[in-house]
Image 1 (cartoon, rainbow, N blue to C red):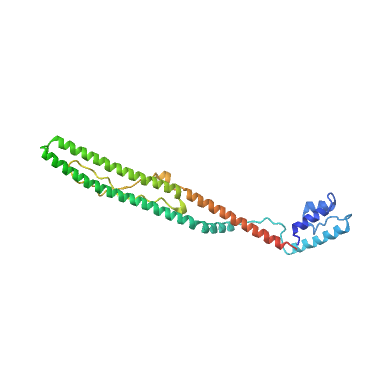
Image 2: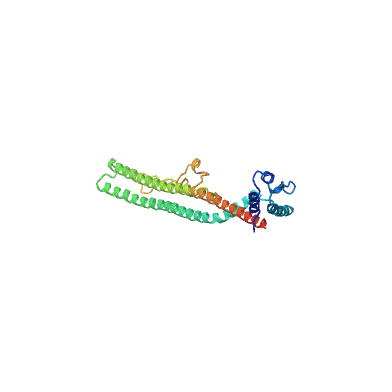
Length: 271
């Protein structure tokens, strides 16, 4: 069956250009032809019959309240529904990726802090052995109270302190690098804030001649530091991708709705 558009095109092709009928059809369109019929005098009888048939069809459409070729509109409420549906389809994937990435990151950082504690305990035991060994050697050589022993003990303490501090800096730097990578990838994803850096005790002090480190147990410091000005509110790569995926899916749902309405309209207007 011919659609309205096909009938319209067919009638315009039949009415000779330049006639009064053609001017009426071109200027007013079919929606007005019922009240302002064009002058069909001088046209072949078969054209007049065809015109009258189409006019009757269009009149029935108008009586039914049909709109001829309306612009298909998508309301803001529909867009909101499409967006919510798109989020429901997209978010589970990105949520699972975030969960796995966060778990991996926290495990790595936790392992690093554990390494830190184990290293410092082992270094403290080793340092205590070196202090006792140095004291025994000095006593055997008659340098128990000499400046030579004091210099050796100070050198040992300085080197041990440097080893301790260097290890802390290395582990903290590596953890900070992982945190920055996590932020660049997942910062802001589904409202995800940056994981809080774990606190560790302040770096022990190594004192010359003392076999145990001096611990400041009341002082806690973050294991790594990130600049708040840079990382607060950061939109990471995965959050950017999530938003793009939702926009694309929302657009697909909107286009599908437009196509559905267009098909329905075409069916309704088919003779």
